[in-house]
Image (cartoon, rainbow, N blue to C red; front, side, top):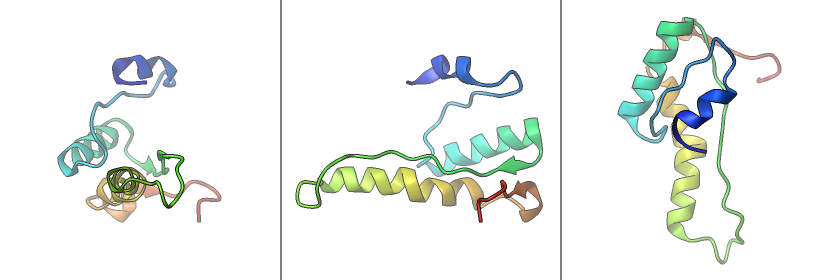
Length: 92
């Protein structure tokens, strides 16, 4: 699902921010929007999969999976002061 169609699944207090979490500028913009609306942030990891075997896994698919599943978390958290991150119960 892409775009504002996703917003119908948000809770009433949620916001929709369009961007690419693997892009540093988009990640900063999303974090800024979230902090302005909510203050503290719960940091969760969302990810993608490409179900393939090691032998058939194309390099570009591997790069995309790693960018979305790993790099994006770093980009989303790197500029946050520690005081603005709240660790959800059971996350550590």
